[in-house]
Amino acid sequence: MAHRPGTQKTITVVGAHYVDFIIWDLLAKSFDAYQKLDFSKRRFQTSTWEHSHASAAIVLTTIGIESYRNWLCYSEKFNVGRSATDDLCTVLARRNTAFPRNTFKQWLTEIFVLRDVIAHNHLYEVTVSYDEKWAMSSLKQRLLEGYGDQKFEECVNPETRTTKLLRLNVQPAKVGFEDIFKVLVILDLMVGVTQELMGLRLLRLDCQKDGYDFRNLSEILTYYLDRSPNRNFQAEVEKCSATLRNVFGTFLPSRSTGEWFITNTCPGCSAIGFRKRPDLSNCHKCGLTIQPRRCSSRLPACSAARLPP
Image (cartoon, rainbow, N blue to C red; front, top):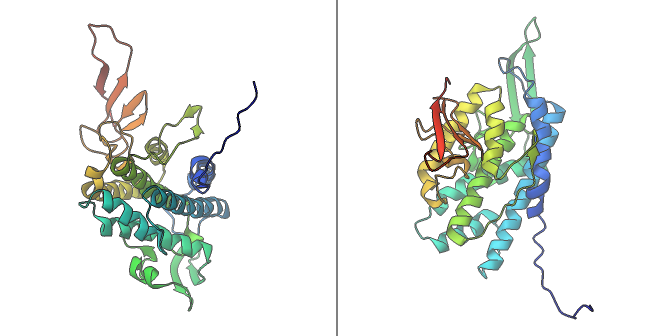
Protein backbone atom coordinates (compact mmCIF):
# COMPACT_ATOMS: atom_id res chain seq x y z
CA MET A 1 0.00 0.00 0.00
CA ALA A 2 1.47 3.33 -1.06
CA HIS A 3 2.28 5.87 1.61
CA ARG A 4 0.05 8.91 1.47
CA PRO A 5 1.89 12.26 1.31
CA GLY A 6 1.54 14.47 4.37
CA THR A 7 3.32 16.80 6.77
CA GLN A 8 4.44 16.42 10.35
CA LYS A 9 5.51 19.06 12.86
CA THR A 10 8.04 18.21 15.57
CA ILE A 11 9.18 20.34 18.49
CA THR A 12 12.88 19.67 19.17
CA VAL A 13 12.98 19.20 22.94
CA VAL A 14 16.13 17.08 22.71
CA GLY A 15 17.68 18.06 26.06
CA ALA A 16 14.92 16.28 27.94
CA HIS A 17 16.21 12.95 26.61
CA TYR A 18 19.43 13.40 28.58
CA VAL A 19 17.38 12.91 31.73
CA ASP A 20 15.37 10.02 30.29
CA PHE A 21 18.29 7.90 29.14
CA ILE A 22 21.75 9.11 30.22
CA ILE A 23 21.59 10.36 33.81
CA TRP A 24 20.98 6.97 35.40
CA ASP A 25 24.18 5.38 34.13
CA LEU A 26 26.19 8.35 35.40
CA LEU A 27 24.43 8.20 38.76
CA ALA A 28 25.22 4.49 39.13
CA LYS A 29 28.90 4.96 38.27
CA SER A 30 29.25 7.85 40.70
CA PHE A 31 27.66 5.70 43.42
CA ASP A 32 30.12 2.85 42.72
CA ALA A 33 32.97 4.99 44.07
CA TYR A 34 30.90 6.78 46.72
CA GLN A 35 29.75 3.62 48.48
CA LYS A 36 33.37 2.60 49.18
CA LEU A 37 34.21 5.76 51.14
CA ASP A 38 35.03 5.85 54.83
CA PHE A 39 32.79 8.64 56.14
CA SER A 40 34.57 8.77 59.48
CA LYS A 41 37.43 10.60 57.72
CA ARG A 42 37.52 14.17 56.46
CA ARG A 43 38.36 14.88 52.82
CA PHE A 44 38.80 17.94 50.66
CA GLN A 45 37.86 16.27 47.37
CA THR A 46 36.00 13.28 45.96
CA SER A 47 37.61 10.66 43.74
CA THR A 48 37.99 11.52 40.06
CA TRP A 49 35.58 8.70 39.16
CA GLU A 50 32.82 9.85 41.53
CA HIS A 51 33.30 13.52 40.73
CA SER A 52 33.41 13.17 36.94
CA HIS A 53 30.23 11.12 36.65
CA ALA A 54 28.31 13.20 39.21
CA SER A 55 29.35 16.48 37.60
CA ALA A 56 28.36 15.30 34.12
CA ALA A 57 24.99 14.16 35.45
CA ILE A 58 24.39 17.53 37.15
CA VAL A 59 25.18 19.53 34.00
CA LEU A 60 23.01 17.28 31.84
CA THR A 61 20.16 17.52 34.36
CA THR A 62 20.21 21.32 34.20
CA ILE A 63 20.20 21.12 30.40
CA GLY A 64 17.16 18.87 30.71
CA ILE A 65 15.45 21.36 33.03
CA GLU A 66 16.04 24.16 30.51
CA SER A 67 14.57 21.95 27.79
CA TYR A 68 11.51 21.34 29.96
CA ARG A 69 11.26 25.12 30.41
CA ASN A 70 11.24 25.60 26.65
CA TRP A 71 8.61 22.92 26.20
CA LEU A 72 6.32 24.33 28.89
CA CYS A 73 6.65 27.87 27.57
CA TYR A 74 5.84 26.63 24.07
CA SER A 75 2.79 24.77 25.39
CA GLU A 76 1.61 27.89 27.22
CA LYS A 77 2.45 30.24 24.32
CA PHE A 78 4.78 32.09 26.67
CA ASN A 79 7.97 33.64 25.30
CA VAL A 80 11.12 32.40 27.02
CA GLY A 81 13.24 34.92 28.86
CA ARG A 82 16.84 35.02 30.04
CA SER A 83 16.24 32.98 33.19
CA ALA A 84 15.04 29.36 33.14
CA THR A 85 14.08 29.54 36.82
CA ASP A 86 12.01 32.71 36.32
CA ASP A 87 10.22 31.22 33.32
CA LEU A 88 9.43 27.91 35.01
CA CYS A 89 8.08 29.53 38.14
CA THR A 90 6.04 32.04 36.15
CA VAL A 91 4.43 29.35 34.00
CA LEU A 92 3.55 27.21 37.04
CA ALA A 93 2.17 30.18 38.99
CA ARG A 94 -0.05 31.11 36.05
CA ARG A 95 -1.78 27.75 36.48
CA ASN A 96 -2.21 28.18 40.23
CA THR A 97 -1.71 31.59 41.81
CA ALA A 98 -1.24 29.96 45.23
CA PHE A 99 1.92 28.21 44.05
CA PRO A 100 4.91 29.60 46.05
CA ARG A 101 6.89 30.63 42.99
CA ASN A 102 9.55 32.66 44.82
CA THR A 103 10.33 29.85 47.22
CA PHE A 104 10.49 27.32 44.40
CA LYS A 105 12.81 29.64 42.49
CA GLN A 106 15.24 29.69 45.42
CA TRP A 107 15.57 25.89 45.37
CA LEU A 108 15.90 25.75 41.58
CA THR A 109 18.47 28.54 41.51
CA GLU A 110 20.85 26.57 43.71
CA ILE A 111 20.98 23.84 41.06
CA PHE A 112 21.99 26.39 38.42
CA VAL A 113 24.59 27.86 40.77
CA LEU A 114 26.16 24.40 40.98
CA ARG A 115 25.91 24.03 37.21
CA ASP A 116 27.88 27.27 36.77
CA VAL A 117 30.50 26.15 39.29
CA ILE A 118 31.09 22.98 37.25
CA ALA A 119 30.68 24.38 33.72
CA HIS A 120 32.88 27.43 34.36
CA ASN A 121 35.27 25.52 36.65
CA HIS A 122 35.41 27.99 39.54
CA LEU A 123 38.97 27.94 40.83
CA TYR A 124 39.74 27.58 44.54
CA GLU A 125 43.05 27.71 46.31
CA VAL A 126 42.93 24.77 48.73
CA THR A 127 45.41 24.37 51.59
CA VAL A 128 45.37 21.06 53.43
CA SER A 129 47.27 20.14 56.60
CA TYR A 130 47.89 16.57 57.77
CA ASP A 131 48.90 14.99 61.06
CA GLU A 132 51.58 12.35 61.57
CA LYS A 133 49.17 9.62 60.41
CA TRP A 134 48.30 11.47 57.21
CA ALA A 135 44.84 12.28 58.47
CA MET A 136 43.60 15.71 57.39
CA SER A 137 43.88 18.08 60.35
CA SER A 138 42.85 21.38 58.75
CA LEU A 139 41.47 22.73 55.49
CA LYS A 140 41.36 26.21 53.99
CA GLN A 141 39.48 26.95 50.75
CA ARG A 142 39.64 30.33 49.02
CA LEU A 143 37.64 31.15 45.90
CA LEU A 144 39.87 33.08 43.54
CA GLU A 145 38.87 36.52 42.37
CA GLY A 146 36.63 36.76 39.32
CA TYR A 147 34.49 33.70 40.00
CA GLY A 148 30.86 33.76 41.13
CA ASP A 149 27.98 36.06 40.22
CA GLN A 150 25.11 37.63 42.15
CA LYS A 151 23.11 34.43 42.46
CA PHE A 152 26.25 32.66 43.72
CA GLU A 153 26.67 35.28 46.43
CA GLU A 154 23.02 35.02 47.42
CA CYS A 155 22.85 31.23 47.50
CA VAL A 156 26.21 30.18 48.97
CA ASN A 157 27.31 30.04 52.59
CA PRO A 158 30.92 31.34 52.45
CA GLU A 159 31.88 29.45 55.61
CA THR A 160 30.79 25.97 54.50
CA ARG A 161 31.22 26.49 50.74
CA THR A 162 27.82 24.93 50.22
CA THR A 163 24.48 26.34 49.10
CA LYS A 164 22.15 27.45 51.87
CA LEU A 165 19.11 25.24 51.20
CA LEU A 166 20.32 22.04 49.53
CA ARG A 167 23.87 22.24 50.90
CA LEU A 168 25.34 21.52 47.48
CA ASN A 169 29.13 21.63 47.33
CA VAL A 170 30.39 24.61 45.36
CA GLN A 171 34.06 23.71 45.61
CA PRO A 172 34.28 21.79 42.31
CA ALA A 173 36.62 19.05 43.55
CA LYS A 174 34.13 18.10 46.28
CA VAL A 175 31.13 17.64 43.97
CA GLY A 176 29.98 14.03 44.09
CA PHE A 177 27.14 11.54 44.38
CA GLU A 178 25.33 13.34 47.22
CA ASP A 179 25.09 16.50 45.12
CA ILE A 180 23.56 14.84 42.07
CA PHE A 181 21.16 12.99 44.39
CA LYS A 182 19.85 16.29 45.79
CA VAL A 183 19.61 17.79 42.31
CA LEU A 184 17.43 14.84 41.25
CA VAL A 185 15.18 15.33 44.30
CA ILE A 186 14.40 18.84 43.01
CA LEU A 187 13.96 17.52 39.46
CA ASP A 188 11.47 14.97 40.76
CA LEU A 189 9.59 17.73 42.59
CA MET A 190 9.51 19.90 39.46
CA VAL A 191 8.21 17.02 37.33
CA GLY A 192 5.49 16.23 39.89
CA VAL A 193 4.33 19.83 40.26
CA THR A 194 4.22 20.22 36.47
CA GLN A 195 2.10 17.09 36.14
CA GLU A 196 -0.33 18.28 38.81
CA LEU A 197 -0.68 21.88 37.64
CA MET A 198 -0.37 21.46 33.88
CA GLY A 199 -1.32 17.85 33.19
CA LEU A 200 1.99 17.17 31.43
CA ARG A 201 4.14 14.15 32.21
CA LEU A 202 7.70 15.27 31.54
CA LEU A 203 9.76 12.26 32.56
CA ARG A 204 9.70 8.79 31.03
CA LEU A 205 12.30 6.53 32.55
CA ASP A 206 14.55 3.95 30.96
CA CYS A 207 16.48 2.74 33.99
CA GLN A 208 17.28 -0.75 35.22
CA LYS A 209 19.16 -1.81 38.34
CA ASP A 210 19.65 -5.28 39.81
CA GLY A 211 17.33 -6.73 37.19
CA TYR A 212 14.48 -4.37 38.07
CA ASP A 213 12.97 -1.74 35.77
CA PHE A 214 12.34 1.40 37.78
CA ARG A 215 8.97 3.02 37.15
CA ASN A 216 9.67 6.47 38.55
CA LEU A 217 12.40 8.69 39.94
CA SER A 218 11.18 8.22 43.52
CA GLU A 219 12.00 4.50 43.36
CA ILE A 220 15.47 5.21 41.97
CA LEU A 221 16.26 7.76 44.67
CA THR A 222 14.94 5.46 47.38
CA TYR A 223 17.11 2.62 46.06
CA TYR A 224 20.27 4.69 46.44
CA LEU A 225 19.30 6.39 49.70
CA ASP A 226 18.77 3.00 51.36
CA ARG A 227 22.25 1.92 50.26
CA SER A 228 24.12 5.10 51.20
CA PRO A 229 26.86 4.36 53.76
CA ASN A 230 26.63 7.94 55.09
CA ARG A 231 24.06 8.10 57.89
CA ASN A 232 24.47 11.87 58.15
CA PHE A 233 23.52 12.21 54.51
CA GLN A 234 20.42 10.05 55.02
CA ALA A 235 19.36 12.27 57.94
CA GLU A 236 20.01 15.39 55.85
CA VAL A 237 17.82 14.08 53.02
CA GLU A 238 15.08 13.23 55.52
CA LYS A 239 15.14 16.78 56.90
CA CYS A 240 15.31 18.44 53.48
CA SER A 241 12.42 16.32 52.19
CA ALA A 242 10.26 17.27 55.17
CA THR A 243 10.91 20.96 54.47
CA LEU A 244 10.03 20.56 50.79
CA ARG A 245 6.95 18.47 51.63
CA ASN A 246 5.60 21.12 54.00
CA VAL A 247 5.85 23.80 51.31
CA PHE A 248 5.12 21.95 48.07
CA GLY A 249 3.37 18.72 49.07
CA THR A 250 -0.11 20.03 48.26
CA PHE A 251 1.01 20.84 44.70
CA LEU A 252 1.96 17.23 43.89
CA PRO A 253 -0.35 14.51 42.55
CA SER A 254 -1.76 11.89 44.92
CA ARG A 255 0.52 11.30 47.90
CA SER A 256 -0.70 7.73 48.37
CA THR A 257 1.07 6.22 45.33
CA GLY A 258 4.66 6.80 46.48
CA GLU A 259 5.44 8.18 43.03
CA TRP A 260 7.06 11.40 44.28
CA PHE A 261 10.13 11.21 46.45
CA ILE A 262 9.36 13.86 49.07
CA THR A 263 5.87 12.42 49.69
CA ASN A 264 6.99 8.78 49.58
CA THR A 265 6.70 8.44 53.34
CA CYS A 266 5.84 5.68 55.79
CA PRO A 267 2.17 5.78 56.89
CA GLY A 268 3.32 4.72 60.33
CA CYS A 269 6.15 7.10 61.22
CA SER A 270 6.45 9.42 58.15
CA ALA A 271 10.05 8.38 57.39
CA ILE A 272 11.11 8.99 53.79
CA GLY A 273 11.59 6.22 51.22
CA PHE A 274 8.71 3.87 52.06
CA ARG A 275 7.77 2.53 48.61
CA LYS A 276 10.77 0.65 47.21
CA ARG A 277 9.16 -0.86 44.10
CA PRO A 278 5.65 -1.93 43.02
CA ASP A 279 5.86 -5.20 44.96
CA LEU A 280 7.43 -3.89 48.19
CA SER A 281 6.93 -1.00 50.60
CA ASN A 282 9.12 -1.08 53.69
CA CYS A 283 10.11 1.49 56.31
CA HIS A 284 13.78 1.57 57.25
CA LYS A 285 12.93 3.29 60.52
CA CYS A 286 9.93 1.55 62.12
CA GLY A 287 9.93 -1.65 60.06
CA LEU A 288 6.39 -1.39 58.69
CA THR A 289 6.15 -3.54 55.55
CA ILE A 290 3.38 -3.82 52.96
CA GLN A 291 3.60 -6.47 50.24
CA PRO A 292 0.84 -6.79 47.63
CA ARG A 293 -0.19 -10.39 47.04
CA ARG A 294 -2.67 -12.40 45.09
CA CYS A 295 -5.90 -12.54 46.99
CA SER A 296 -9.27 -14.29 46.93
CA SER A 297 -12.54 -12.71 47.90
CA ARG A 298 -11.81 -13.65 51.52
CA LEU A 299 -8.44 -11.98 51.66
CA PRO A 300 -7.52 -8.29 51.88
CA ALA A 301 -5.71 -6.68 48.95
CA CYS A 302 -2.41 -6.50 50.80
CA SER A 303 -0.67 -7.86 53.85
CA ALA A 304 1.06 -5.68 56.40
CA ALA A 305 3.58 -6.55 59.05
CA ARG A 306 5.95 -4.65 61.31
CA LEU A 307 9.48 -5.95 61.02
CA PRO A 308 12.53 -5.04 63.08
CA PRO A 309 14.05 -1.75 61.78
